[in-house]
Image (cartoon, rainbow, N blue to C red; front, side):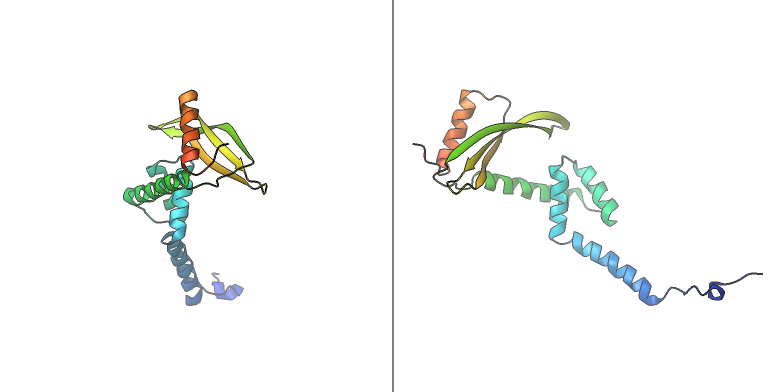
Length: 160
C-alpha cells in the first residue's frame, strides 16, 4: 500500500518557501555586487591567491562567475590604496620610533617566497602606536635605511 506525504502530515512546499529561497540567493548576489565584492576579492588577494584562485573561490561561495578583468581591477585599486597609505602625511613628532622586520610568505613572479617586511612603528606622545610604513627589500644596508629615513622626513616627521 502506497502512502502520500499528506497521509503522514508532512506539509507540501509552498510558493512562499520557494520565494524565500530565491530571495536568499538574490541577497547573496546583491552582496557580491556591493562593497562586499571589493572586500572579498581584496582579502583573497591579500592572502596571496591568484586571479584564478579568487575566481574559483568566489564561484564556490556565491555561485556566480566573475571575470579576470574584475579581479584585476579590484586588485589594482588595492595597490593604489596601499600606495596612498604609504605616502600619507605623518605627525611631526613621535616619542619613539621602532624599526623591525617580519618574515612573511609573499607571492613573487608566480612563486611564494619568504621575505622580510621592514616596518616603522611610531609611538605618539599620547601613547598611541601607528605604523608609519612598510618596506619589502632584498637588502637592508645603509642605503636602504637612509632612503627610509628620508621618506619619513619627507612625509612630515621632524628629526632633532
